[in-house]
Amino acid sequence: MNKTHTFHIPVMGIGFTIDAPLKVAQYGIDSVISLVDDILIEKLRKMYSEKFEIPYTEITDKIDDFRAKRITSYLNMMSDLVDKKFEALKMGATEKGEELKAYINMLPSSSKVKQEFNKLTEKGFNISEIKQWASQNLTKGSIDVNIMTKVDKDNYIKNEKLPIEYNDAHAALRGFANSKLKSSVVLSAGMNPRLYAYMSQFDDFYPTEDGTFKKKIILKVSDYRSALIQGKFLAKKGLWVSEYRIESGLNCGGHAFATDGYLLGPVLAEFKEKREELRASVEAIVNQELLNQGRAISKTPLSIRVSAQGGVGTHEEHEFLLNQYQLDAVGWGTPFLLVPEATTVDEKTMNQLMLAKEEDLYLSDISPLGVPFNNLRSNTKDLEKEALISKGRPGSSCPKKFVALNKEFKETGICTASREYQHLKIKELDKAGLPLNEYQKEFNKITEKSCTCVGLGTSALLAYNLDTKVEGEGVSICPGPNMAYYSRVMSLKNMTDHIYGRDNMISRTDRPNLFVKELTIYIDYLKNKLEEVKTVMTNKEEKYLLTFTHNLGEGVAYYKTLFNELKSTFQDIKDEVLDALANGEKSLSLIALEIQDLSIQNQKTQVAV
Image (cartoon, rainbow, N blue to C red; front, side, top):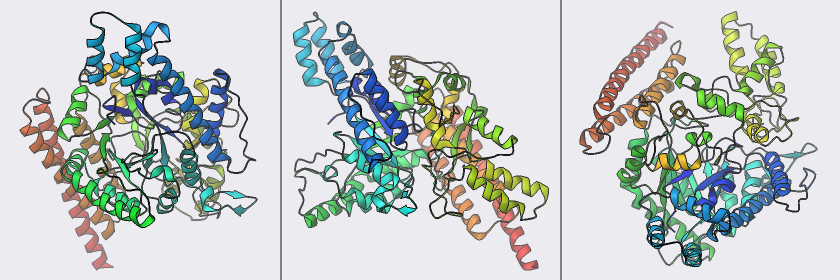
């Protein structure tokens, strides 16, 4: 089925897109809900039940399988409410057809639906004819969900470990699988073999004879190799990946997965070149497994979509990615944080985002998952964290425990941002007898972790004036570096007009091209990694740094060829981009020499010892 729009809104944080489908799906826009926080999900289900006068019975944590049941109930409610909004829009039942006009106006100019509507209405507005046409031609946006596969905490009742299907990610998957939604689950943050095997228990993920699915799988990946490995692994269970969603390793919001220095452009080029090879090789495996299981095999070839996201900021970049790499869609995340009609952000955080400049947006080590995390300087959750450190009581009370995954001190797991973990770790540090400067460095590493599993959901509670007694009022937020170039609150129409080139929401004239920005971030990341090993560099670290540098060099060479060959796109910035690439090349040459010097020094030290 052809999608209405050429963009989607990816998951953002835990709470920022928690109800995005209710705001945008009636306009044909796809968006993604995070399934991390079932406590937040239940609070919003209660709020919306009261708002729309839907009978509500609380699903308490005393009920068996409460996490999955909360998620199923919330998603079913979202489905029903979106359906009602969409039907009302098609029937022109609200505000004299204003919603229908809004739907049409937001479509890209190339949309056949838009062209047909304009043709139909050019001689007047026949209400009954329009209703019939709308009913047949308009489609709603997908209510997709996101599961971070590694956020799969074991759960216990009275110190007794529950079976694996009660793990957090497993329960979230079951919650989605048992819902009435006909949509997709986005699997992110790497492979979880146990979770992938568990998916095979749900019939909704298998194809029908006509190649359709009730529930589809989307894989979020940073490179082709990861897509191929995971696609084949799932295929061996009889499961088909319907979309490969490629995200820039570092030029994105939220957690950042740097890969080994693979840049977005070359990765997309590889997907373009090998797309059919990927589809066919995975299809052969999945069909064989479906045959083994005695399940239906599609009579037509199974299709895949390929999309990309991370750092896209202009209409020209959007169109270039679609056309150059033959993508099906492009994800736009960070700018939508300034669109209240699409996302849920509290007023104070919104003001901070509007004022944010490049230096306020940085790659941090605050995530308890131990993965680099894009952060906004002076967010209220970090200020709360620093106040606790100043009081001599570092760490969070850890009210939700969604990332209590560290088993260093307890088999049941503790979150590295928690007061309990940091207290134990500091006690350990106190016994190490380190010099003061080394002690402080290690102390800072311990206390830097922030309670993001709470902080990333609190904004929604504040925005809707819901109780935050358990959570506190500190907000974590994780915009990508692109946020520096947006500085005002926008309407949904503003944003879609910006994406489709009908308007411009960026007032600054110094925003770098997305490929140049990504390269700059990667080189900075590499420099920091090199700085970390300057005292002692192991052979493994040397190999990693050299591979990283080589891959970045290959990426720069690819971009030089690409930009030199472009005849119409990016012409106004072509020289500027080529200069930036030349500077990137020089930086990489200097880094390679520095790694070489370090290696020689290490060899001399080892010989001397």
